[in-house]
Image 1 (spheres, chains in turn red, green):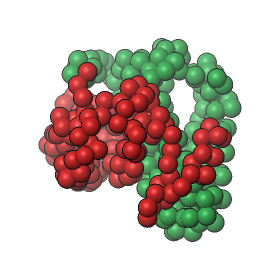
Image 2: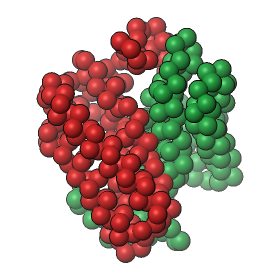
Image 3: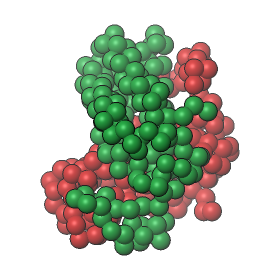
Length: 152
Length: 152
């Protein structure tokens, strides 16, 4: 861990940002971690909106986690050289993610928008509204996966 | 994915909570994901407070992600039967985590407190205060790892 951080500290910063170059395998692992943690929170929201036993606090915690991850700037983890490689597992990113900037911007923007809205709706405790918003949010996950994530 | 969610929906809820039983391997993977994503964000904050090039927005995004994950209720992922098993990798949790409830409560409470404070301090943009708070937050990570995470 220490040597990893040292590497981060020593490496050059990218143009105009404080994003440093990290090891490709770390970048892949970290982004897979973000999606993996969101998967839990999506499952929790789904259970609450479809299970007939709505727990407002659970949905708020889940929606807040998704919102914070969505707004964390994960795009910085798609560094050059991370189109192939293994984090927790082999990356399933499609090459298009690195070339179709307009398409990526569109799906990423939609995702962030609906994640922010999900957190807002969760805070109200309105189960029906949460269910509807969960559908919209899930649609933006799928939209990105369809275009930019390879199927197994 | 569909069958996993179905399993969640069909399974019994635990006493008094909306936490459903999930597959042990999913619970382990999801908690490893949470820690993995926090590792990125800790690395980002470290880079900013030690790198001599403080980017307020980067630190805010990172601190907010850590805060939301810290407050997400990850404890629910330490289900009975997840003391051994493989998520992304074999779990490194020590058996003590499942027996020493008081000790776990203490380190978890300290972590959540310092994660909340980190987000507050980050919002001010005060680099020196962020550096100090980063040290405190990192101390709570280490405190838990020392007691409840096996070394490689």
